[in-house]
Length: 216
Image 1: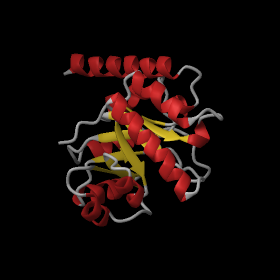
Image 2: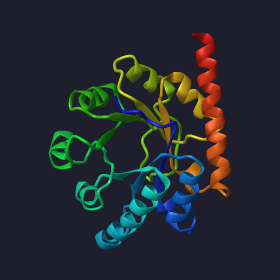
Image 3: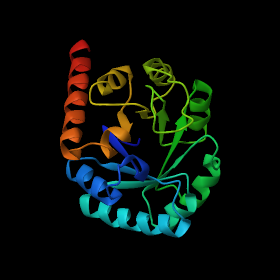
């Protein structure tokens, strides 16, 4: 089964406040982030490819996995470690046919039915959210809360990643609800000190896991 790291950076240039995206990724991976998803909606295809190549080289240097959001051809072109699909993207079985069995495919889900379909189609992990209110997406869905994580956790052993409005202050709630890790955009891409923010996330996640162990 896929092992999901506790903290998963979604690298979005629009959330970086004008700072170069590779600088954010380098700081995050140097601080211990082990999964990076490249999400870019506004650059040309050529520019996205060139930036993804830079991130591929950087993640290899730092021992992190690179996952591409939405774009199967880009994931194949840069030899990414995986692909992340939304509900309106290619069907997972089609993506798997081209990507192969050795690379990750994750799926964004917002309901139990969406999660069940992703499980049935062979997702390696499922993102559940938005857990909390978020301004990252202009047309963000209403928050589903940590109860959504609990409901999906009750029906599967597949690793769950919580996403949406997650900060060092609230990440522990998602872990206690059953998430294996948290996917974070603004709280890392917009952080004044990326390394210190990664450390704060890791401390909060460790405390949440320790409290779960005590209860067990």
